[in-house]
Length: 265
Ligand code: BEZ
Image (cartoon, rainbow, N blue to C red; front, side, top):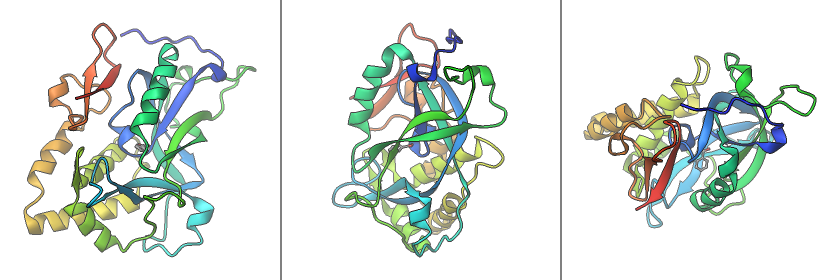
């Protein structure tokens, strides 16, 4: 595996923060994947999904980030939220940045817009993997993040947790079952750090498991979660969780194992 360990100025680098499906479905052409967190936000299943985990007729629910000061003014049944929103930062291989930006613009619409936020690597991350500024110092990493803000059409806002769980249980879209997205996120978060769990996600996951046990709808989903356990490298594209109808990850011929891309079928 050839990973470029030289440290260009942070300005030369493009890092992307994922707090949802990007945690286990990496963008193409990354060479570093770093667990860590951002602050000032609350992660909630408040974004309707018409294109991945639902349809325009029956939208599913996926996560977005809510500005914490805005969230504090709302009445949310889940009335606590961790200060840190855990996820993963990806560094895009410098030569592929233009290509990846173009691809991400296509992939991530449906209400999400581009924002930038400081990312804090987990305490045990090897500092040599992180960018440094022009004075040679390492601080938080500037990352691009996709957020469905409250003014976008797909923004749903606070929902009763049991109704939200029932909704997620019923929903399905071109990328698969909405419940697999929820359970995939729960599992991916658990894998990042002992402190990376998110009560909102865990509570919804537990509720959906209870519904699935009642309705007999958990078995297929569990198989897919097992496939999601090794999120960075997909040894065989057919065995990966990434075989959405629209997006199949595939290894890029001569490039080393951490590099994957999506192709449109
Ligand atoms: C994320 O994982 O951060 C993400 C994925 C798709 C849309 C928006 C955010």
